[in-house]
Structures are given as structure tokens and as C-alpha cells.
Image 1: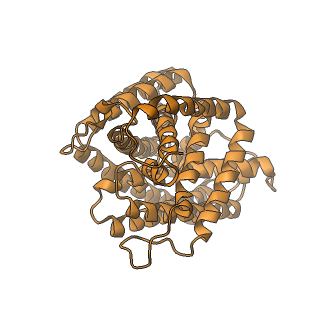
Image 2 (image 1 turned 120 degrees about the vertical axis):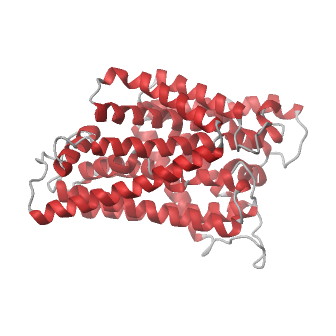
Image 3 (image 1 turned 135 degrees about the vertical axis):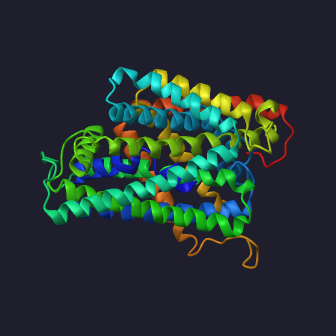
Length: 425
């Protein structure tokens, strides 16, 4: 699930953006290594929290236990209206864009295909968790196979002295602040979603053993994937290029596999995004179920089909809002809408490890090593990402923040009517 959730539209696009903005393999590998390290610090904190609270909901549960029901409600409000549908809409648009490239269809089909993708994957989610997990396993294996194929093809072309893609100016030899900021944002987007595994901790067998291994091994594999793809791109495009991401992927595919099979790489992107979309639609409704069971969301959302592992009401709401976002915004606008809000609450929920009392050494939970260094590094990283988004996409960041802020007055209307089962703030 970690690989399926994380390695989506960014499997080839983020390395392409990295090479275009930084202009060197060394710079790209340094960013990937730093991003992998910082992501691992957050994964360590989430692994401890997930083993301490093996319940459906992930970040919502951590926030509720650390800060109280009001903060947890605002997080759930944000997840329902901003983050979850925003991720689903962005993935659907990414899938649509590259499916059209692979099939040589005109771009005006982007929105209809994206809406169809949201509907099809929602129906697949409702068919049962077994269907979604099979798809995620298959797409995760396909992603790893695609990376291996790309690297082997790149090495073979380099050794044979084959013609590379014609390079065009890729940017300054010494990247400035704007180029570095763009590379960091691209890398963060490429790593986004690893925290969603926390929502499934209530359904994981032996979370003490499984959660730390899944989170950390997933982060290591993702880092290796992006580093290998960057190396393969350099073998094919040694001088870099200023082409757009979709055009660049098509160029690399044609160079590696020939003009007839050049659309194989965009097709690989479609497969990668399909696995991510399946993971998002499967995991997101767990938060709504947890909140409804706490009395913070309508009781209808508490209904959960244990046999199928699905929430019909939660999936329906997420699908409808995602479809609305597809109709209203572009891929970049949707990213600016949901990513800053998601990043803020990601940092806040990880910081719960510092707020809550530390478990004793003999407790049957995973304890974050070198505490509190991991959370200090991770929160520093979160502040940097928030600053970059606020500077680069101020309007979309403000719209997302305004929707989240509305959850505060709504919480004062909702909480007094609910039975209080947790600490209040």
C-alpha cells in the first residue's frame, strides 16, 4: 500500500522535473536522498503512533489523543473537504492526461476521462477491499518492473552508444533558489501519501511488527525507485531538456523503445497512477468512519462493511467532491488547494509523539529511535514545505486554508451536541 500510494503520477514526472530544474544528476540524487531521510523521520514517528493506537483513522486518532476532539474534528473536516478529494481529483487528472498521450487522443477529453476514472475506481472500492488490494499489488509490481525496464533499457542504450534524446537548454548550470524550491516541492509531491497507511492500522495483523517495516521499507524502496529513474533519464538525456513533463516522458519512451513503442512510458504512468488512486479511495473513508463512531460526523458514515472492508457513505462523499474539483480546477490548482493543508496537519499529527507521554521501554509498542531528533528534523522539513507553497501558490493556499478554517466555527456547533469521549481543547 505504501508503494501504491506514493509511487503514482510522480514515478517519471518528478525525476523529469528534477532534472529540468536542477540540471545535474548529482543535485537530483542529493534531493532524493534528503527527501528520503526526512520522510523516514516522519515515518518513524507515525510507526510508533500507529502501534500505540492501532485503530482506523490514522492521523485523526493521533490528533484526538494528543490535542482533543476539536483539533481532531477540524482535521477530519479538512480530510473530507480538502485533502482526500483533492488527492483523488489530482490523481484522476494525472491518469487522464497520460492516458490521452498514450492513446493519441486530444486534450479536450481530459476532464471526461478523469471523471470516468473517479467513478470506476469508486465502484471498484465498493466491490470490496480484496479487489482494491489485488489491484494495488499488481500495480506495485508493475511499477517496480517499469523502473527495472527503464534502467536496463537506459544502460543498454548508453553501452551501445545509441542516439539519445536531443537535448535542449535545461536551465542554469548553478540552480538558484527558485529552481531548488521547485525541485523540493516536486520531490515532496512524489513522496506524498506514505502516511495513509496509518489509517489502516486497525486492520493490520500484528501492527507492532508490520507497521514499522511497511513504512520504513516503503520509504527506502520509493527513494531507490526515484533515484534509479533519475539515473536512467540522465543516460537517455545527458544534457537535460526544457520540455514539459508529458512531452519529456514521450520523448524518453521513443528514444528507449522506438517510435512505435514510445507510448509505453506514458502507459506505465497510467498504471502507476491507477494504483495510487485505488489506495486513496480505499484508505480515506476510514477517517470518516472513526469520526462518525466518535459522534463527530453523521452516524450514517459510521456504517462499515467489515466483510468487504468498505464504507459506502464515505466513498460516495469523497467521489462526489473529487468529481467537483475535477470540473473546477487544473492539476496544479488542485495541488495548491490541498497540499499545504495536508502538510500542516501531517506535521501536527506527527508532533503528537512529543505531546503524548512516552511509552515505557518494556511496552509492546514500537519506540522511535533517537527521540526527539526524528520529530525535530521532520517538523523543520514541514515548515520549509509550507513556506515554499505559501510563496509559490499563495491564492490556492489561501483558498484551502479558508475552507479548513471554516471547520473551527463548525466545531463549536457540532461538539456541544455530542457526548464527550476525549479531552477537549
